[in-house]
Image (cartoon, rainbow, N blue to C red):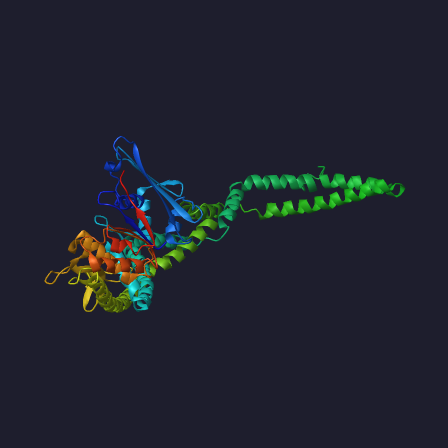
Length: 505
């Protein structure tokens, strides 16, 4: 923790610290880094990370394991240029290290600038500096933005699929009309199948019922014939004559009596069946015609009439939904337009809050630079919007919008009077850029979530009182973060909590 100074003579290899961290943080693997004659170069790092942070969550999702609250990272570069990365004991793509780098270490070096040089980080930095003035409207904007995206997606889906949905509606209407024309009843197909089977074999059924009736109850045309009812009655009379002498025989006589009653009932039903049997060929034709109509429905809409009726119920519900598309499109369009108008107002509030905060932030950074041997440098923010006919209206213009508003935020530097403000990555030399980053980080201290800062040659081209001021500011920054500084100035190193000396042997 605190402020660590890495010192040593020019050429001793102090920049090795920066190079090593660059590799650990997903930087490009250069085979020239491997010592001549060696097979590979290896860098290992141990980074303490608070549990629950997004960096830890992403690392654990990749299979990494924490070692006593620390994340172990290693990077191997072969002499052929091949590179391998390991995170928490698991092999991971190098891109994973770069993804975590933004939240773990901010590197401000002569050739390697990360963190605040990215426009998104500059906007986030400004938003955090502004505090609630931006956070409150940004939260409302984010909620409206998410709702607008959901409405836009649903509207686009309905409009894009309008032709498909119209075709589906036509198909459903045809099917429902066809079913309504037939007017099927639940179970009707089963009933008609049974009736058709009966009508188709009416003569055979009638003959069989008549013959069975004659066998049971006798045939009037053959008075001499013997039938089952007569035989059973004779058997019962024979037993009734002697039933008083043996209870067992009496029980058998009773059972024969039950058989006689059952035979009489069956014979009566057979006579009724034969009389009621309809052998009308016209009725058979009508049944077959109705069955054909029902079969037409079952071929198209279900395996039986019950399934056909279920299809009709679902189809009717779906058709109602499809027919309401025009109404839904109107509702969604109105809601989208309303949300765009609301978003435009919230975006304007965001822009106003950012503009006010940007002026304060830039003034504070400029004041810091005056004490860092850049007395004539001026820092400013550019807040821009991009015209987009599909965007939201802000201050009379239709501009592109995103989840964080309509503003593109960029930090600009004019290094001396008369120089036009340019993006800090292009408007400053390596040493100046490190000092600008130091000034930004000092002003920003305590609100940036990055826990570690590395400054390489932040004191290039300065000396005397300016070097002392640089050291003092690095020490101030080290009160809220871990600060590692590569330096060759005693005025800077004197402020450090610990010293690391690099020597070449």
